[in-house]
Structure formats: structure tokens, C-alpha cells
Amino acid sequence: MIYLHIPFCKSFCTYCDFYSELCSGKGLQQVQNFVEGIFREIDERREEIDAVRAQSVKTLYVGGGTPSVIPLEALQSIVVKLGYKDYDEFTVEVNPDDITSGGEEYVRELKSLGVNRVSMGVQSFDDGILKWMNRRHTSAGAFNAFKLLRKAGFGNISIDLIFGLSQLGEEKWIETIRKALDLCPEHISAYQLSIEEGSALAGMVRDGRYTEAPEEQCRSQYDILCRELGKAGYNHYEISNFARPGFEAVHNSAYWKRLPYVGLGPGAHSLRLVPEQVRSWNSQTLDSWTRSGEILIDKEIREERIMLGLRTKEGVDGMSIPEDKWFVSDDIISNLI
Image (cartoon, rainbow, N blue to C red; front, side, top):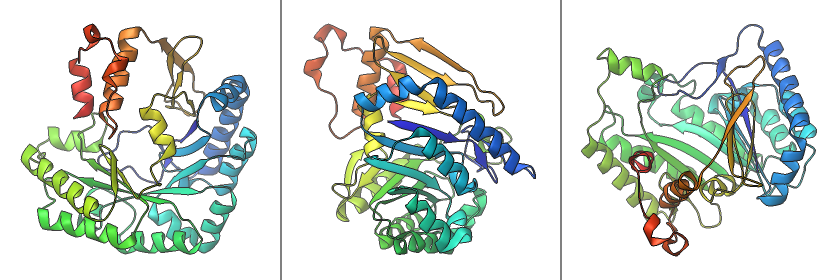
């Protein structure tokens, strides 16, 4: 189970605080330096990568940032360097604008690389909201991108949506969901807008240029989401994730089960389970990232199991946790909200 973080974007979304760097006029050199850094990290962590593949599901997830902004040759070189071909699931996150601008040739090459699942950040089908989010695509562009992916033979497409915006009314939200359903994606991830400290949105809140949506509005929109997707036959298998039966995300489901994984690239996190449980993370620096980590104690392991388990449809097996250990901290509660 491998995660690869591509830390590049053409522009920053209003709500986002994930680590990323703007592609500048020297973007190709930036990407080349990044690829060389990934090569070094793969060499340094080869034993760990091989061990995790033996212990966990065989998946590769390429996220960001915006992976679709880098030349496909750069991504291909990293895939070749990893040296594996038998991924049960190989996901790449894409922006609709990159799909439409790249056209059929780009999508065919993406598929020939071995990608068998695409996660596309649509977020909204309302052009006004997309502009407010500082997204690069339009509603029409998202539809066109989806059609290009389908035409190329991608049979496992996930789209992201965002709700809980103060300017998002009930009728517009229902319309958004139904437009998403018209595409018949295999998977839908829907997230409530949150105010992340490092985002432009956090500054807008501080300056009084944006007021958060009331809790009741957010709850109502989540209820609508669950109802509409349930009627359409989607399995609500995790708080924010819905899938047609058999299309639940293999990679993300492994996170919630606390299977070991290796995160490559600046800002990426990893989890090792043997000989002791260690969570590590890479620094958010593009030129030369370093890795730090901590050994998890029993209390932290237990709380992670509870927090992650409660996010899923299966929940938590109470029999696996001694009765005197059933304590839920404020951190768990906050992570579930």
C-alpha cells in the first residue's frame, strides 16, 4: 500500500491547506527535481516498501496537490522506479481541466500507465460556486472530462463533492447531487466544508468576508446526500464515502482498517506496524524533504482504532477492546465531526 504525494498545483483552491507548490515558469525543472527526490526516497526506503507490500493490500494512490498537472512521463518514471505492476487498485487524482486540455491522448496514456481508478475533484456543478472555490474547471468541463474518461475505458471513476457552504441552498445541493448521479460514477466522496487554518478561506473568515454555514444547514445537506445516494443504490460505507457495490475504495478502506502503508513525497505520512507501531511523516519542503516519526503507545493505537472504526459502516468490534479501556477522548470526537 503506497501513497505518492504530488505537491504541485496551477492555483490554490479557497478551502485547501494540503501541502502544494505553485507550478512556476520553471515548472519542468521543479518537477525534475521532485522526481529525483522521489527516486532517492524509494532507494532509501526500498526494504520498507517491499515489507509493506507483503503485509498490506497492493495499491498505489497518487494524490496531491494536483497529480494531473505534471507531465505523464514524470509519473511514469516514478511508477517504473517502484518496479511493481500487479496493483489491485491504482488511483490517480485529477482535475477536470487537465483531462479536457489533455484530451483523448492524455487519457489513453493515463490508462496505459496501469491506472485503473480515477478520482476527479469536481466539488460542485454550479459555476458560481466553482469560481468562489477558485477551481479551474466549469460544470460543463467536469461533464466533458468524465465522458473522456469513460470513452477511454475507465470503469472505476470517483468524483468529489463539497457541501456545507453558507451560499449553497437546499435546491442547489439537490441539483448538484442529481447531476452527479446522471454521470453514474462508481464512487462519490462528499465532504463538508471545513475551515483549515492554512487556507485562504480561514483568512476570509477572520476578515469577515465569509460566514460559516449553520450546523442545521450542514446536517440537512448531509441528510439529503445520504437519502439521495441511498435511493440510487450507493453503499454508504464510510462517513464521507459512497460506492456502488463492489467499488468501495480499496486503498482508503485500508487506512480505516489501520493496515501499514508507505507515504512518499513531501508532506506524506506512513504507518509501520512491526516490530513496533510507528507513524512517520515527511517534511513539507520541496527541495529536500526529511522524515520524522513517533512510536505509538497502546493508548494511541486504541484511540486510532476506535476513531477510524467509527467512521465506517462496520463500526468497532467492542470485544477486541477490554471493558476498562473504553474511553473516548475529545480528540476522537473532534476527528469524527
